Image (cartoon, rainbow, N blue to C red; front, side, top):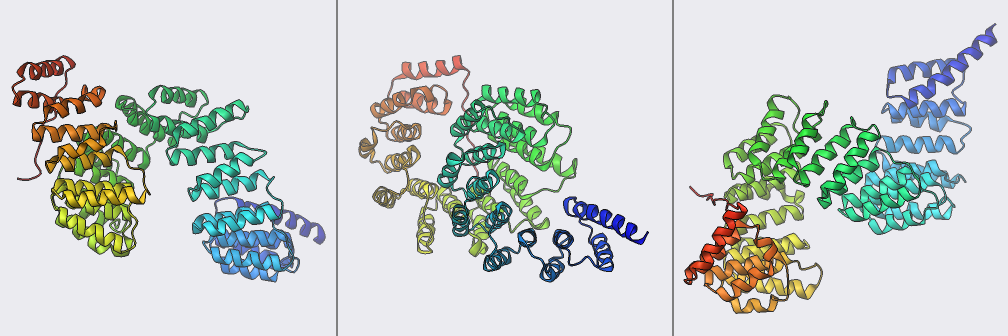
Length: 557
């Protein structure tokens, strides 16, 4: 009878332990109770029981107890080692995980797929490319490259580090791919905004007769939004409904963003309004969509609604959207209120919030407040912070200060990117610092480190035009960028150079037909030289196309 009872208890315990490990109970007291029963029955040395127990303690956050159990196990195969390594990773003890792995190797054990997956997760959380490459080399060394789970782990690892060439190499050499492989590769391409390549991956997957899940569809929706391809977006939306994923909140959020980026705000609002459940991502998506479509007032109304009606806790992403709205509306008082709100909610130390505050205060014309946010950031500053403050001083006419900050940034070891150069060239242009602007532009060309875009050429053209050196613009006349030719047209208007203005207008004829501001500029230029018929013709064409120039406003009282 006694032996029968023991056998029944053993069967119950062996069923309970996996349940404690695999569910979300995370009940430490229950785990300790089961542990006490195991000790009472004398099973603490059993490898299976001990491994399950150490997993329970690790998932409950009691890693010390896990270590004690692990060290007391007499028969230690690879399974307990993998469980302990995973336990360290689960509790954020990544260095300990690698040290334990080294111990396992010294003990003569060889890693398997479970070992690799635990170590790759550790590499992801540490963000270490060097460790990533070491784990990858180990996979090759021990012949694990044919395991699809291992390859997926490496693919996810390189994707997390945004290492597209390495991720592509792994993906292309995989003999077997599952839906995780395809979705991981598509996610990376979408994240890097290589939307066309992501779509090609999907078409290849479909041709390979692979089934796809909601993550694949979500990536397709995001790709359609990046490309502004409304037809494709609607087609994928139909697939979402057909496959029964219509109630998946992440997909609905992606569709809200996609429709907004495709400038179909009505569809975006429809998806949002019909979502039975809304998360903070849903609200952030619709607010960002309204901003993207030039409706800052409606975006602000949405923010107020989510704060007071929905009673949701505002996160850093939503506050960035609200601050951007305040900047678009040039609402200094609103920006200050939102700044106070970030302090009250404890979000003021988020780098994204501080960078956005610098940009918003600058757009509201108060560069002193922008600087008061920038200075205390100290080591928290990144290139976005420097770009924001340089641009802030530039757009407010403090070109000399912008140049000083640019020099300070370079002396501190910062490497300017495309946005940095655009900000400083614009600052030089607005402050009439032609010599400094040309010197910086010369350095850009000499370094040949970034791709010089039409926007950079546009800054130089505007700088020369403002300085009265329009003939020097002739060195850029082989370009075809819209920004370049608009800048030249603006310069022509200030210098009454009608001949070059007509040449610039012809260069971006398709865009100027839809830009009332530029049409009014050209019309005024015609009138200033006495060509009233041409000026009237342009005004009449605006009326026919129902184009209305947005009235200007000043940030000064």
